[in-house]
Every structure is written in structure tokens, then in C-alpha cells.
Length: 260
Image (cartoon, rainbow, N blue to C red; front, side, top):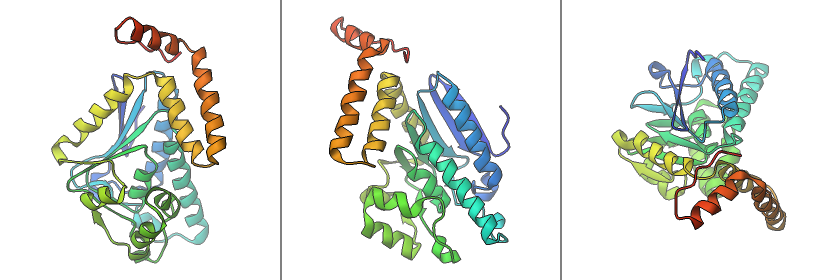
């Protein structure tokens, strides 16, 4: 499928979605958000997809934010629709059945950081800079930043980043618990693919169930989460993958999972 502002590739079960607007530091406009939605829906239907990597084109930016040139003339109604579009897009990323890895290859600011926060595993290059600078433009975060960031790093640190609008480097983002790992720029995508390969070799139904349990479990009580886990664990015993995985273990060979 042809896209104007993104590119999508798939190899050995690993899909790579790249934001491709390097002249504007991969800023998110309406067209880009709609293309991301379309790509996610197509990838979700593809049984070959085991892991999704999202990154940006070039060495300067992952996504430098929402497109200010498009936002500047908006009235409140237009701003409302644009924020809804951003939230819908990031929810599709967060709810994508398979794990999503963000390979942050430069600036991840505003909507860019908010996109990152919707991913499951976050890798950052040494030159990455992250932040929510919306208040410096006279607005607040509008794609979920005020909600996802406190849930990830705690209220106090999130408020500091949001209220000051300051950028932090990759090392500080790691210390804050925003990113999983900091990697040299030239090795970032290779490292993302290596982690993706480790995930992709596992039972895909089990991985998807585990992702769903973590996400849904954080929205409910511990006891309810445990009940969800018990049911999901038991249901996996009805799958061919469970039979194959345990049989392969007993036979001391690598399993061949079929997502069935």
C-alpha cells in the first residue's frame, strides 16, 4: 500500500513503520496520523506480523512534534478534532495486538514523545532529546501526555517535565524510566530488530495475551488482574502453540509456533 508520509516494511515477522517527513523533522500532521492509522489496521490483519518497530526517517528526529504550521490557525473546534485524531492514533498503537518497539532516533517532542509513550518498549539513541514543550506554545499536551507520562514515571517528575516544557537527553530519560535502553545512533535500529527477533520467536498468542494482561491489569485492581491472568493462562492450553511449545521443550528442540 502506498503512503505519502510514512513507509512500512515487513521481514521475518518484524514490521517497521517509519515516519517519513525529514524536512519538517517528521512532524505529525493530519495526513500522517491518518496514514499511521491505516497502516496499523493493515498490519493488525496480517498474520505474519509478530512485532512492530516505529521509528523516524533521518538522524535528527523521531518525531519533533505535531505540525505547528497546521495547528497555528486552528480554532477550538478544529483543535478538538485534531486532538481526537491524535488520541485515536496513539490508542491504536497502544492497543496493537503485538508488541510495539519505539526506536527513538533523535528529537521526540510533544506529539512525538506522546507517540513514544504509547509503545511497549522504548529504545533511544544517544542523541535523542525528549520533552513535552507544549506550554511554551501556550497550549497543554493534547495527545495523551498528561495521562501516560505520570502513569509511567510518577506524578512529580511528569509535572516537572510538563510544566517547564524542558527537553531531557536520553541518559536522563533512562534515569527517569521513560526509555528501556540508550544505544549508539548507528546501532539503534539493529538493536530494535534484535529485541524484536527475540520476541518474534516466542509463542505469538502468548505474547499478545501477556501484553493485553499488563495493559488491562493496570486499569483494575490486583485481584481483578489476577483473575484475568488465570483465565488467559488457562485459555492458552486450548491452543496448538501451547501443545507445540511444551512438546518441543520435552523433546529438547526449538518450537515452531503457528499462532493457532
